[in-house]
Length: 614
Image 1 (cartoon, rainbow, N blue to C red):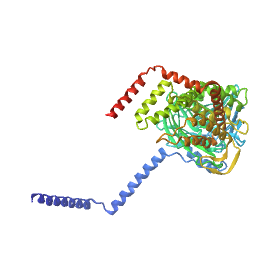
Image 2 (cartoon, one colour):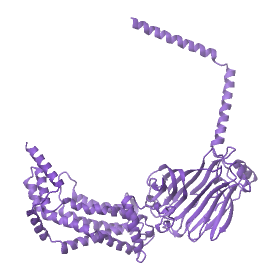
Image 3 (cartoon, helix red, strand yellow):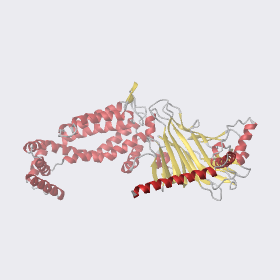
């Protein structure tokens, strides 16, 4: 009863409080006139705050400019403030040597065309890294009068001079005759590397040092190869950061990272690279990459869109950064010249031991051979050398297979004898292997040893600049796929063409697998069908390599062909199965000393057997 009374009192208390609240609300509610005045005042305050935020944080919208329209020019100068001192003059300046052709625009002071003089695309068009507004470069900064400007919207005044044989282009966005922001380009003869300096003079009172100054570089990779998907696979944003670490953004999907101490950025477009480098690392850089390739199409023009936003620091209110532009081939012979910058690390050799083999073994070996041999013949000779070096491993592999073949009848007897006791069968089989000096695992050794070589070559042929557009037999380009027939339709995973080198490589792999696996192939309960795997592997090779570098398919064809001949020679002239059988029988008579591992395994199996009996 007391509990019920408490509930009633509680409810009454809440009702009283609610009533008092309604009374207070009605007595303090402003009149209609007061409410309207408050609303107007609030809107005024919000509008003032919005205008201040837009003035402080929004980049000034520079209107499109018709230089013949005096009103438009006046509006432009009013928008950019003090930088309106520089005359608004459309125009470009050309910097060129025997290797590269650069066009720098007065609008933005940036490179608007970068063309390779000695290279063409798959359809014989000059290779462009910058063209038709695919790239933008500029500084975003705030001024002391609360403007946010970007240099890509400003006009620069060009001045060309020389320093010995070097050509110097000074682009200045001025606020007065002696106060300016300068982009300085210095091009050397016969060199892809262009010195690039950003500096300001007398702008400490113009630049707002409390707001960040960001270097913004965005570029879309222009297609150069007949297969845009294949080219896009090796198109990546690569960068040097954290005291020499080399990292990459994703090759197949959109990606972004924020890094520190960035020494260089490489927008690699397969065989060509646009690189911004500095000897004084940028403190931080926000990097992003967007994949632009959805399918294999002749109409696809761009591969990836890369963007870098890099905050720049001022000293006493002024900017001063010494950098370098590199527009050129992703070629070790060229990039190794710039060891101070370490640009050769931008080449995709692969990681770890695989990259080491590729960089310090295959690349110099092929460069040496192709120096006096045709490019396709150089691949064949290099393949022969690799197979000869690997021949001792091949010999051990075949010797192990021969021993297993000789022991096959005895293993069959053990299987039949202990068909109802799997543990005992395994124990006796291991004893037989131990006495005979054979091991079923020794056949895995060649595959393990060849794995680093396989992967290194897998990266070498598609990315080696020395193979680019080098023909051999019916292949027009050893760094791309060969075509003997063009299909009128597209087959998923295979493509719209037929390549011959992958067909030859698949046939050779099939016969090699028949020699190494087919003769000893046994179907184990619960295991995958080995004959199916035997036929599936060459088929997968045929499909996968149809769109890969023909030089890689040529290597695997010749490699497996040589391996087959080596194994036939070993079988016919070196190994004698009768002698192997006799040797095994002699080994079985001799007492065989167990190592610790073998002894431990035997004891464990014996204990398991005893436990099973109990």
